[in-house]
View 1: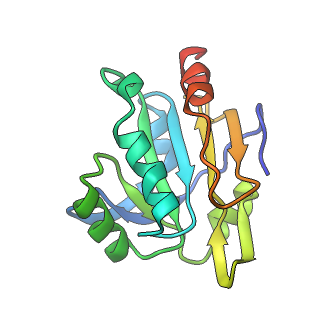
View 2: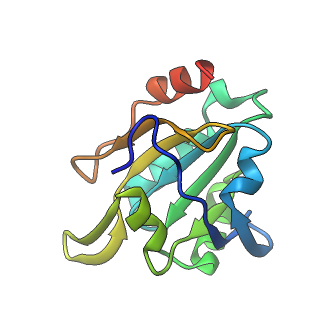
Length: 157
C-alpha cells in the first residue's frame, strides 16, 4: 500500500456525480487543492454506505472548497449513479472496474468474504503536488477510518 510521501498514481476512470457519467482524472482535481480518495468494497454494502455518508456529513469539510472527495470502487458507474442518488452523495464516485488503480494504490483484494476482485476500504489524502499525505486501509471490512486523522492531515496542508 502507498504511504505518506509516496507519489499518488494518476488515473483516468469513468464515474458519476449522480447525474452524468464522464471520465475523472486525479490530476484534474489536485490542481484545485487536496483530494480525499476513499476506496470502498462495493456499492450498497452497509459499511461502505456508512463510510460514504460519513464523508457526506463531515462538518469539517463544509467551507473547504479546495478539497475534492472521490469515492472509488470496482462497481460500474451506473451502480455508482444509483448509490449517489439514493444517498444524496455530493461527490463523484468513480469506477475502477479492472482493479488497475486499486492495484497501483496497493488496496486491491483478490477475494474477501466470498466476493472476488474488490478494493479494500482505504483512504488517501493527496496534496496538490500529487503526494500522499495520509494513508489508511482497513484490517477488517467493517472497520471505518478515523475521520479526525483525515481532517488533521488536510489541516496540515
